[in-house]
Image (cartoon, rainbow, N blue to C red; front, side, top):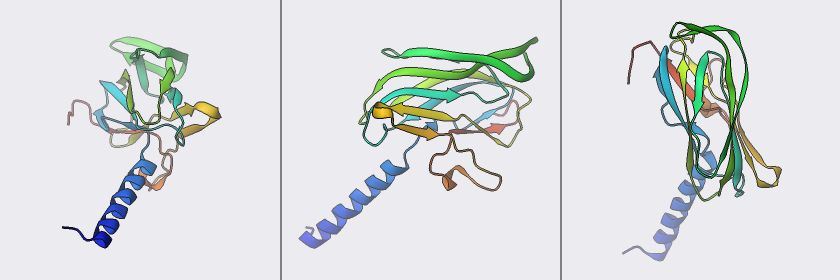
Amino acid sequence: MLSRSRFGAFGAAIVAVLFTTAARAHATLEGEEAPINSTYKAVIRVGHGCEGLPTLKLRVRIPEGVVAVKPMPKPGWTLETVKASYGQSYDYFGTPVTEGVREIVWTGKLLDEHYDEFVFRARLTDRLPVGEMLYFPTVQECEGGKAERWIEIPAVGKSADDYEYPAPGLKLLPAGDRH
């Protein structure tokens, strides 16, 4: 049987762990590595709102070298894509492509106490740098004009753990490498 003082210390430790986990939660990719020259299913996980407020919109910027983006509609949410030119032409199964989806926007309502996933698929071209990280800057807009901007891209020699608001990242593997 736990004494009152041991139970109090134990309870305080549990609260500290839960608070730390909640404070460090952020927008992340479910699959954190994928080979270049392949189709990748991105699942962006959103674990909380903004300071207790519901999420109303999620914006995901598509990086250069990622083409043929197709977002998955979510029941109860509206879906918008923003198309623009790529910085260069890419080969998509023998067809040159010079423009496509550069941003995905889901608009709806996700309460702070709920968790959800936002999905899209895309082609990771063979021009992406193997062994490096590819980042998908994500902005989570909430009620009251609040926002969580998961847009920090680590500088050389740093990792996502060095930042408060890291962008969801994907490690690029050699073509044909499946983990």
